[in-house]
Image (tube, rainbow, N blue to C red):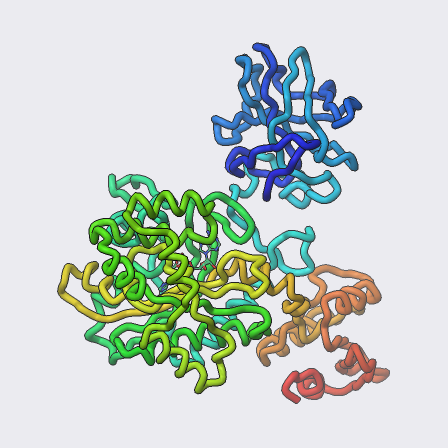
Length: 552
Ligand code: HAM
């Protein structure tokens, strides 16, 4: 969520952590020292850009310094103190032009806020009944089955669609699935992940006095697992995993505090053919999801190329990672800041830009390009030395996948990290390694925006309709038989009108409905209806089972 400009007054962008909901809010700078009311109440007045005052109900105060926790007590405000005011019922006016607030004996200038009119931004809790103290934490998600209760809710069906594509493609390439613990020793990440990720750890001291962290990435875990077990496996070892990861990042589009990430890695192969194989896998995962070369590109680069560049300019070897960090941010940072940082490393910014523009592939990058061309995947990759990767452990070919329009953050990233297994095993196991991580957040946003997500329903095969309650036992027996035959089956747990049950079957997208009936002779018979063609067949139990067989 980004901040907005109020009537020409520039509002600074506030970190989302100060407010964990999706309603509009403003940050008010108090004009004088006052005691605020426990809750804002109905008396608050906001001034519109052209000084038109209007009233709104700001229903509580959030204190930025307490991380957005509600303090339902009167508080003394020093002049210049900043207070968050929730202004949910602003209605159609929106927030765009608000600039002044007054309420209960104090007033202040509105200095920042998060946009949205109340219609556009529903409360996080779809029913609105959950106490705000118990709402989902900022940057964490709830996944709902479709149809979604809110337009911007996260879909569990879409997530599973992604997981299926991830798993199927990885298996097509001969990768085997593994998993690891979600909580790890802190040191696993401080050893070699790099300063950026270490600054984003969800870490704490556990009850056994151990320094631990929720896993922010999978690579150190898999490298440790490989170091401990590589003798049991034939090389190259090709493994994949789909862990949920946790990073205390500034919440923004495409970046949350948890995400799922497909990780595919190869161990024990130093030949460049492995680099091409892993990149081809990345491309095919995205292709399986319906994206093509018009939608995304994999930008290829080389840590070694940058290392050689740095060495040839007599860069201090002890500060090489610092240099890689500057290159990693080169596209996001202001040019003058980049130039300043490079100067501090005795590197000329023009020299760096010339190297990037030339984009001359190293021999190993050329080999990757040729390998991908042989598979018909050349159009999906481009040499781009703007990429270097932020993580500290990369040593060779590195790459990142982006949407072609440049609307989103990186879809995936990875590269070769030949020293990590050795480092984690204290020199005992020396195995080359490479791989990539692909997050679900950007990918789902991209698929949604390109209309590449299918529509999801309950995917039911049949609904057993119980119209005659004297036949409930026989109907339950049919439900059981159908389920044992592998069908996805629903029925009404309690008595309900037949037409209501039929309507529900249609809503659920079922393909067949079944009825258990008695014929004129009082014998139990089974009627099956195909809901699209409305064709019906009445017969014995076996005919009911075969009629609705999806494989028929
Ligand atoms: P990474 O570039 O930090 O690499 O993350 C890979 C992908 O995970 C990103 O391109 C992005 O799609 C997603 N991602 C990362 N952080 C977030 C976040 N806060 N919210 C949502 N999505 C996120 C790694 O993690 C490496 N360990 C990948 C790797 C595997 N390298 C070799 N093997």
